[in-house]
Amino acid sequence: MTTLVIGNKNYSSWSLRPWLLLREFGIAFEERRLALDTDEFRAAIGALSPSGRVPVLHHEGRVIWDSLAICEYANEVWLDGRGWPTDPSARAMARCAASEMHSGFMALREQLPMNCDRQPNAYRWTASGQADIDRVQALWSDLRSRFGAGGDFLCGGFGIVDAIFAPVAIRFRGYGVECSPVAAAYCDALYGLKGMQEWLAAGRGEPQRLAKYEALR
Image (cartoon, rainbow, N blue to C red; front, side, top):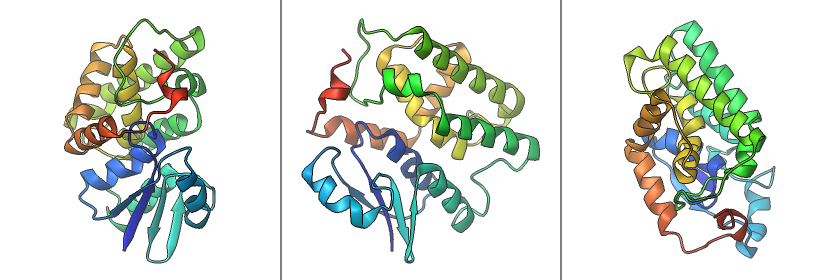
């Protein structure tokens, strides 16, 4: 059995990444959702995740935590390497971009937290948030111009690097970020994914609302 433990679809950007990768590549799994900041989460997470966080994947007795580690595991076990581009240069750059997103962009994370149900309003971020936004769009433009000729995603076809950046598209749309034509088209491609639409609909339909995410209005 393969089980992916996730948090709220409305807010959990880390959970979206491996969930979207598995869904788009047709990998069967059971989903277990734990609502963030609840007694249920606190009571269950210790037995499910060594880090005490989501997402976490359970497969054949193995426990894999951290979103990027889960994506890499899926790439090895189910995708036969298809999660990354076949071209060595594109693969190296995709890994660099995914790792930079995974470990950085703290202002973007803090000032524009993912909220699937959010609509743009007068709220605006600081210069540090804008610097992160600019850097993300520069990364997207570079990858698209160099390696994106084969499709609508960063290196042509959908892969791990796109799953890693999927929550950023939700952030950009939810906060009304001004996007370059390249960035806007890339966000359109991510929103066009069946899995992305499924996640967004479920997130918007969740009854739980957390003040720390909803206050930025």
